[in-house]
Image: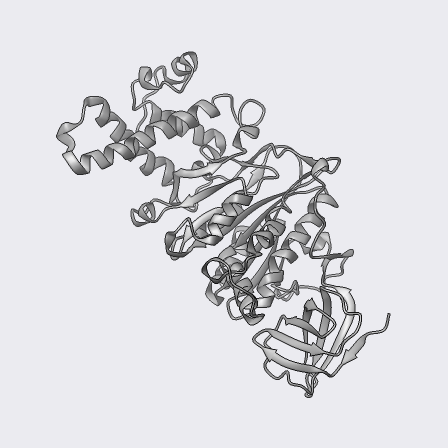
Length: 460
């Protein structure tokens, strides 16, 4: 079908261009806008009616006037996919920016993706090792899960993201890949990500998408869709186990709000569009395992909570869609406990599907429950000490307080450069539990207690 070209731009508002007197234009169509000086900008149809078509431009709209030509290409936005994308660094639109050879695609896939039929979904299971003790032992990531990281402004979530991208692995012979999508990141962060991927060798098994803060907001909206389309291709066409890390979802939602404001839509909470829940669900629900297919897509989206407020619309809606959260804590960060993951508000709802005999170790569940119980009690005792002082504590209380301090000092504070296997993390956990008399470890089977703690002397 021939391209449809118009010269009927009525208005330009922010990233949006309003085109009148059009016919048979479909939602999501790719658009080219040619300015009088020959500069061609790309976008897509955001809304269509008999009176006007609204075009969302992926680049700056400066220079676009009523004399510009608008061409509708009668096709949706597609991502050129190939296994050769592994090891490449792309911009937010999927174009290579690493100076490497031209990418020759094996296929071009619509970035909207196809919803996984619920009947065809398999229950997420199998352990993914991140090398981070607070995640692997306390909030286990399971293959096919979507487990967001809730952080705050200024906290080291980017360092945690890179650590997981570098260290993540699965048991078995399946090929493992990482798709990394940076949205609204600074130029400095962009360079740090590229250098880290290259220096650590993680780039060889990764596809990296980088949308910078200086790039237009509409490009930020398609970046995660480009990344997820690539992940789905590697997973369901090439049989790989794919981990998708997306940072920062807050920047993505702010781009949604900017485009919504330009369209003069009625705002929802905090000015975000009322359809943000649906939009986020369209991204998160692309994680999963499909019956009859070898690969899987697992998601670790990262978002910064505005004012560290977990009730803010972005983390609030994310929590409804996903299966838990990993919480990065400011107080732990102030104490230089890295990575500063607070295990108490953190949760992995599907971890029981990926731990135990055959996945991690038979003692994993009991150890996790006991660590959690003692650490929670220790935090309560810290509050009590702040009120009545340490003199009011019993001998048992003092032992629990000592455990709490050692837990943060050795278990939480592993650093961003140390990769612990699940075996290493569980043995460290037993060393910590040996600080408490065995008869007080009520969450652990007595026989297991005796077996693991006999003659164990923790040097902590």
